[in-house]
Each structure stands twice: as structure tokens, then as C-alpha cells.
Image (cartoon, rainbow, N blue to C red; front, top):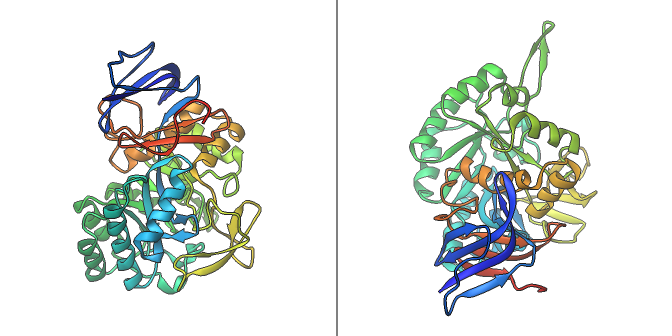
Length: 398
């Protein structure tokens, strides 16, 4: 039996086009204009002009729905993942923080258990490890007690224990031993990324030549241009623009960066090199005034106001409370980016950064059938993961 979506506004990476999509099993079988061939027993969903989009690919989230991925349990991972699913995320890379060794191991265990148990949530390809090998001068909301320089015996232990469960690792490239660490990550199929760093251009360029080609949450917790003896030296922010092939992610919640800067990054890097990320914490998808960043046992208290999470002294943001539908709305409504590019930056581009762009991220025959339906206000009404409807309904009017 096939599933057909008809009368849909299909969002491709470069356009929006009225047409249909046919799904067989867990794959997209066909997509095009007009009407598909429907056989007896097939299921047909008439979307009546609503958007049919590739599911969102979130490459940097710490939690949602009251749970943090540092809680270290399958239940926490599943709750957070299902919360993100309701907002259009069909592929999710849970993100850890710099923490005690045991908590990092627990997070790996939690992901593995959740992948075995959950059958009605987003795909969870692997963890994004944010630290602990970061620059304490750019710690942001990360607890400085757990920040340290890379040590081979420690990171190899993490890598071997987390085999098949770690997809990406954010590090500060200026730290002693960082380049050796980055090469080790690449050898194990893990994507290295630069973030929480005071690196200057020469150090960024060295990192790029050692295989680090992505920048974690551009503008947040990283170096900008500095003056030494009257001369100006670019930091990672400027380097991200100077080095064409560097990809970047931005927290597009409308708080971490103003719409004018989001539009500027889009114009300079383009939709193929710029990904959107929520960098959400546990209170995403909730209406609360206080929360905890990191694990409940050892995390940091934060306050929620002005649609963002802040440190208690209100001197810095602690993370976002956004979900991916909000990011698309901000880019579309406030930064005035074409909707197809907004969706591309929330689907195909992050998928390509993580090396799975040939599997998910666009409506194309042969790709995994991760699809979502939404209206003009980017309100998600339904989600399909691997050919199964796992949230809402694609029926018109529901």
C-alpha cells in the first residue's frame, strides 16, 4: 500500500510547487506536479493547499518538555524528542554539556536506550557533545568547573564508549592538543565543530585545514575582532565569513541575534552554508518562569523572561526556549527570507553538515519519508517519520 499526499504546496530546496508526494514503506517513492496514480487500497491525504515540507533536522538541542538530555535517562530523551516532534523536528541530535565523566556516560546510555524503546518519535542519529574541551573565557552558560583541555586518554574513552552514539563534538581549536583531538574525531566519523572559543583567524584557519569545517552557534560564546598594538585581528566571527567553505549555525529565536544580523548572515553565507538551530534547553515547549540548564542534580538555575532563558544575574543568555517552527517563522517573517530557504536551512543544510543529506532533508524520491505539514503561520499539524504518521493528522481540517 502506498500513501499519497495530494493538493500540497511542496517545499523544495529552491522553490515551492503545487503537487503530490507518494510514499512507499519508509521511503519517498515519487514527487511531482499533477495527481499520482492511485491503486486500490492506497491511502490518500488531500492537504488542500497546505505546505508539505521535509521534516526539520535539529543539530543542537539540550532538551524540551521539562527534560534535558543530560538527565541521562531514556524517559528524558523520549519526552524531549517527542516535544520537538510536535514542532516539526523529525531528526534530532541531542546535545550534552561539559559535565562530570559519569554524567556524560549516562547521556550516552540514555540515548541508546531511547533509540531501542521509542517507535513514535524523531530519528536520533547520535549525540552532539558540546564540551568539555572549551575555552573557559567563552564558557557562556556552561559550568566552568567541568571545562578542561583535551586529554587523549579521556576523549578516547568517551569515543570508544560512545561508538555509534556520538555524531558531533564542539571544541575550542586554540586549546593544547585540540588539533590532534579533531583528527581523532574525524578518524571515528564524528563531525568536529568550533565553538566556545577565543580563536583568532590563524587558529581558525589551522582548524579548517585539520578538518573542522563547522561553527557552533555563530556569534554566541566566541571571539570577535580584537586590536593588538593598533592592528586588528579577526576572531571566529569574522573568520566564519572570510573562509567560504565554513558552515555555520545560528540560534534564530529572534533573541540571541536580531533579525538584521540573521538576514546579513543569510546574505553572506547563503542557505547552503547556514543552518538554523534552536539550542533549546529543557523548558522549550513549556510555560515556566524558572528552569535548570543541564542535569537536575548538577545543573544551573536559569530564569525565563523575554522569550529566552537567562542566567540569574541577567548578564547572559543561558539558552533558548525555542522550537524549530519558531526559527522558521523568525527567518520568514522577521528576516524576510524566502520560505523555501528558511526550510532548507532547517532541513537539508543541517542534514548535509551532519553527513546525512543524502538520506533526509528534502523531498526527493529515494529519501526517507520524514515529512511535516504546516500552514502559513508555520503551525505544525502533522508529522511523518520513516513513512509512519507519528504526530497529528494529515487529514484536511484536523
